[in-house]
Image (cartoon, rainbow, N blue to C red; front, side, top):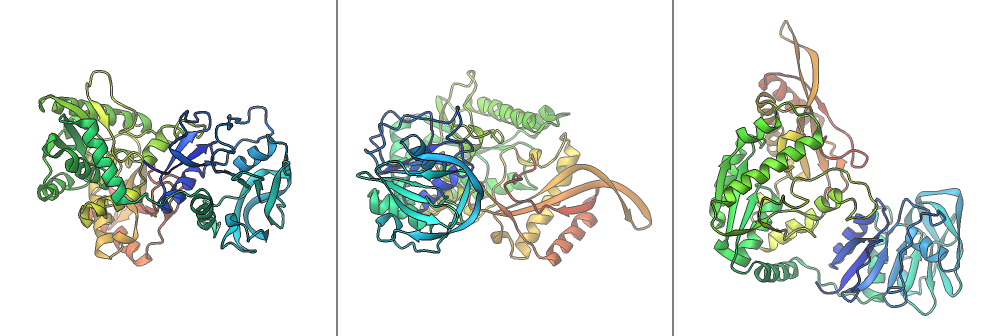
Amino acid sequence: MQNNVLILDFGSQYTQLIARRVRELNIFCEIKPYNKVPKDLGPYKAVILSGSPFSVRAEDAPHPDLSGIRGKKPLLGICYGAQYLAHFIGGSVEKSNTREYGRANLSSVKNDHPFFKDINVGSQVWMSHADTIKALPEHSTLLASTHDVEIAAFQFHGEETYGIQFHPEVYHSTDGKQLLENFLVHIAGVAQTWTPAAFVEDTVAELKSKIGKEKVILGLSGGVDSTVAAVLLHKAIGKQLHCIFVNNGLLRKNEFEEVLHQYEGMGLNVKGVNASARFLDALAGESDPETKRKIIGRVFIEVFDDEAHLVEDAKWLAQGTIYPDVIESVSGTGGPSATIKSHHNVGGLPDFMKLKVVEPLKMLFKDEVRRVGKSIDVGEERLGRHPFPGPGLAIRILGDITREKVAILQEVDHIFIQGLRDWDLYDQVWQAGAMLLPVDSVGVMGDERTYEKCVALRAVESTDGMTADWVNLPYAFLQKVSNDIINKVPGVNRVVYDISSKPPATIEWE
């Protein structure tokens, strides 16, 4: 990739948002842990330092060597990054006497400076820090203040090195995108060439070079990611690609047959494998969420190993891994952030499976995958499909998995999703699904007392799944769906609606 931006992650919850905002400017960027600065900085036109839960005043504060960057590359420190630049280069950082968290407004701005082009006094910014810069280092200039934070932005003399104590990447900083554009485009001179067409051209060329004449096996799920990955690979290697769609017994109602039918017209070489019994037998009696994920991942690989032996001389396994999968599974790309959950398609293959892995989408966020898919003529029916977790209904059934529970949840999910379509709500929701709870509750049907299952409905709006808000679905719709579920699905007598956002909750319940 050309004109890259390097983001050094110090463990901030907002690091991935920085990357998203940079990508929105049609600029490619990569996140690397602060303690793994690339030796070759040649591909990078600018560097951004993230925030952090650490304090620069602590003995164990992250303290990377930036001698190869500062003064040589345009550099922007955000929050901790700014305090790092101040503290270790002669300034003063102290614990803040006032609460510096939440919305603030710029009270003074050096708006004749290109860093603050088109950003004026009064612009809202988002603060999130317990320490504050009390004194600037020598050879630096104050660029902006708020009423409570005197040193909100500064620059070092004679170099394109900047620090800001607010977060331009979050939605609440109203001119945050403009500030990032000022720094990256107008100051650092980074070309805005990160487009779907450029990604497709580069990726197809890379796949051709990497794979050559060898055969590739790809696991199709019916979702956006694996479909776009398949079409990209097909453009690069044609009939060398062998697609397999596995029924793990945890798909939505009728999904196995419907997805196979949809792929018939796409020119892909697809084989359907019904391994339902194999997965459900392996999951029997297991209720721990992480263990369930790992069992599904293991059996998934075993099924692929069996199928790989049926494709003569297969050398590669392709996966639809995307950037949030990598971020959540590898603790902030190997940095100090906490692992949230494992993903069944991340983490490599066991030694017994002699296939190399290719992941053409692993640097893309979900919305970028959709834009790439549109550029290569993937149908809207596939691109508009809600995300569905790789482990399927296994992580929407809290507790152990049985065939009876799967059948119940399939019916509930079908009523909910079809209801969203019937009420023209499906495309207003980023992801929706139902959870079968390990709760039996008392109910009354007719003159009889029941003691049956409770299900939770979940619908969220999001851009890439990193953050999400619950959708305020119409009461009339929820009432209709609830009645349909209770009346038509034996074993369910109670329906609730999940109104939790991510964070603090996750989209899935397990």
